[in-house]
Image 1 (cartoon, rainbow, N blue to C red):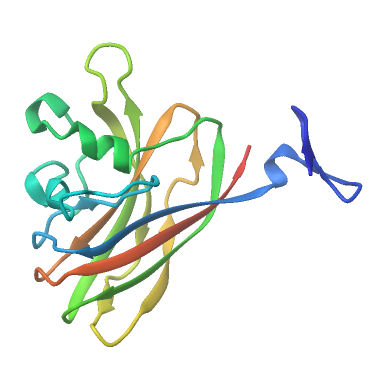
Image 2 (cartoon, rainbow, N blue to C red; image 1 turned 30 degrees about the horizontal axis):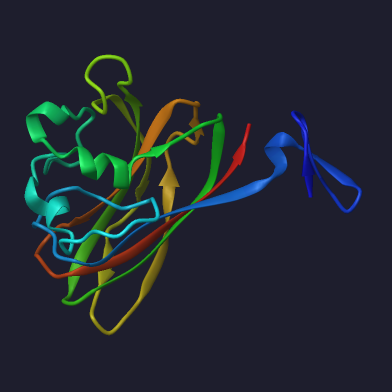
Length: 191
């Protein structure tokens, strides 16, 4: 496969730049949530040395409203390591084609999923997020149990994401604190 500034070429066939299908994964493993709060999912290749305690240490970070917060002030929350693990910085304009979630829980719980795009502050309050916009959400909560692995797709609310924005995926245990294991796969292409 070769690439130039306008096209991917494979086996003598050329596709426009936007024609290449790409994937990005978010996930949490055996995560102990705080009921009703939006917890960011890890999207970068790394491991938490404290069993995810940082991710639940400040549950107010993205709130417990119907949707995740549209801003984040790191100086208030003091959780910059979470940003490094959970922010997907979008380098090029993309179009999201489909989002699939796969999940389970160690007790019978209803799981809620969202993806938001944000403007990342890179000039003064480094790492803060603003102008959050709903990118996708699950249509109806996923009913998860310890003896099943469920899958569903998210409704795409705003599939076009401009370069320089940050995507964050969230999971919420709506009714309890059962441990969540979930993976969210974003299928997208460059535009």
